[in-house]
Length: 66
Image 1 (cartoon, rainbow, N blue to C red):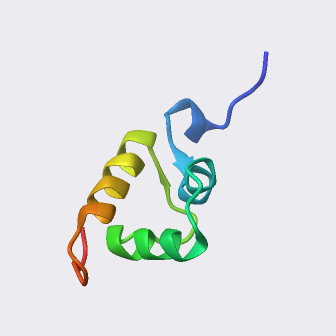
Image 2 (image 1 turned 120 degrees about the vertical axis):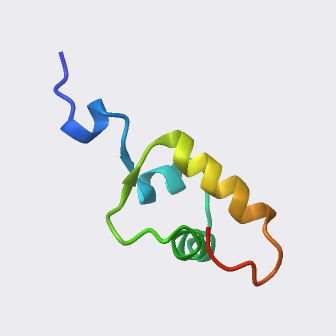
């Protein structure tokens, strides 16, 4: 049986890992992090990531923060 990290067991994953899975370009990841207020190393659930990404992609140009 594989041992999971505590955060993986809680359903939290690094934002960078979720961005790789979702094929985000580096500029889009940087913009998403700024939009959502996420610092480097932040871990979030897949649902939170997908919700933030949907809001980010649907914002108006210069739409500010989440």
